[in-house]
Amino acid sequence: MGRRRGIMSEAFKMELAKELGIYDTVKSEGWGAITTRDAGNLVKRAIQIAEEALAKQNAK
Image (tube, rainbow, N blue to C red; front, side, top):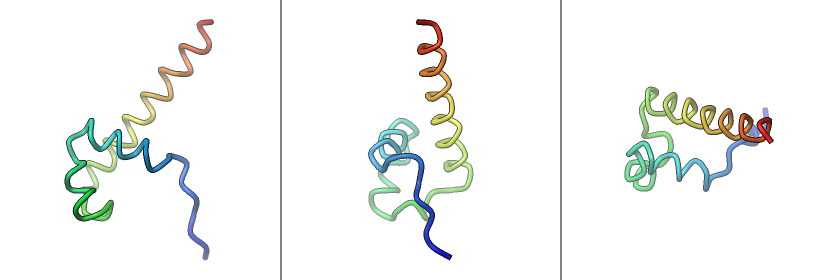
């Protein structure tokens, strides 16, 4: 099975990691070192940002 291509860019994920306070862990140990809860929070925040952007776009 081939590796799946991610939807979020690496830069965006790093920005979210900084916002959520897990950047140092990701930078030093990689994405595999974050907790499941942190990963879920990262996805939740990405969804919130996408929903906000969509709402702004639809409001125009």
